[in-house]
Image 1 (spheres, rainbow, N blue to C red):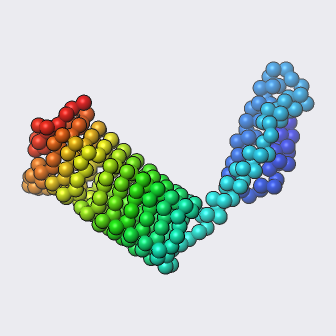
Image 2 (cartoon, one colour; image 1 turned 180 degrees about the vertical axis):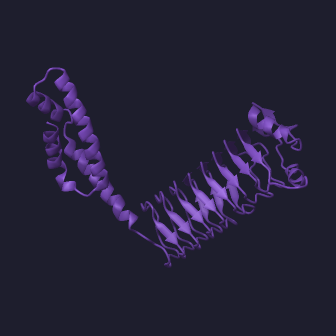
Image 3 (tube, rainbow, N blue to C red; image 1 turned 120 degrees about the vertical axis):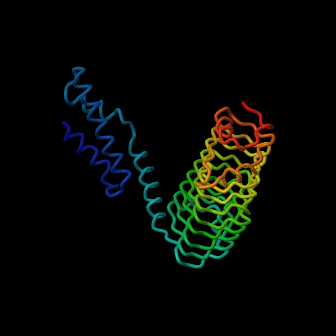
Amino acid sequence: MNQKLTNYLNGIFTPYDGVKSVTELKADLLSDLQERYTELKAEGKDDETAFKMTVESIGDIEETILEVANLSRSLERQVQINLSAINLQKSDFAGVTLHKGKFKVSEMQGADFAGADLTGSSFAASNASEANFDGANLTDCTFSTLDLTNASFHKTILVRTHISTSGLDGATFKDAKLTDVTLTKTDLRKTIFENCIFNGVDFKLCDLRGKSFEGQTFVGVKFDKSALNDVSFKGATLKNVSFRLPFSVTNKSYLAFKTVCFDGATMDKLTYAALKGLWVADLSKVTVI
């Protein structure tokens, strides 16, 4: 009877042979049907009755299969799009959907990605200065060795986005929520952050000297060996935030951290305790919650 169930599904899925996600759906469905058939037999149903009830239990599966197949084929077509090593200056990509797109050694100065869904795309060794990423979905995107001078990230979706060794002078992040974002070996001194929420962000080996994070929110954020001279967290909210100072054979790192301003900040007990343990931070005007 297992073979009969297999033959039944083969007949339904034949038009979609070769579509990976549909093949996976077929394997899962076959397993479920076999389990259901076994249960019905255990209840005393004869072979034909159990088979009929098993098949009826999945309802009209063909519409679901068609939807899965169409989505899979659409994504597969998108994956083939490679926009590397070409001139894309001032190109209009506003509102497009491009998953896992590749932009490597490309000229993208002034390109418009506003509202685009670029999930999983990679940008490397390219000029994207003055590019517009306002409202774009940059989930799981990678930016490596990129010129993002004066780029705009207003209300941009930044989830598990990785930015490393890139130029962000004049780049503006406004009303953006950065979730599980990693910023590595990047100079952020002239980057503008306005009304942002940093959730699970990791600043690793970044230059943040003189940066103002006043009034912004940090939850589960790590400042790992980043330069923090004269950084201001005035009026900011910090929860479960850790500061790992750069290694120094002298007390240079501690003296630099002494210049960080926490006046008017609100922080949880764990963050407060960790900062207090560094001895040099002035926490006299901090509110502990």
